[in-house]
Length: 62
Image 1: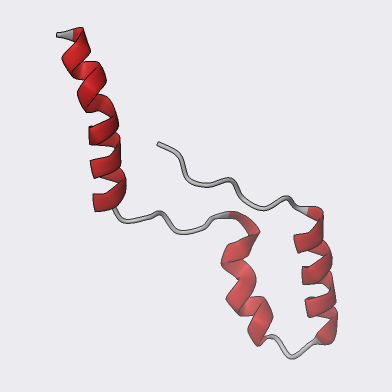
Image 2: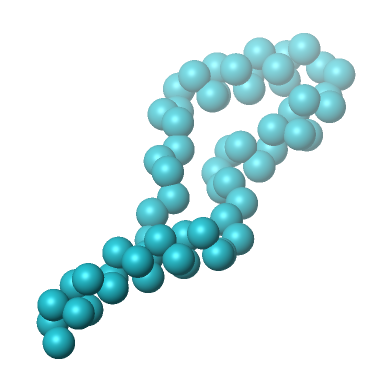
């Protein structure tokens, strides 16, 4: 029965990935809309520095 489980495991992962709702982005990127709507130029400069100093988020894994 181990061979059957090893055969169905990738199919199950694919099924779950296609049929689950993706999680919202976390971290500093949830503030993006607030920063974008702010009229202060200093906030935009600080945001660009902050974004450049952080690596891009990793793709979501199960």
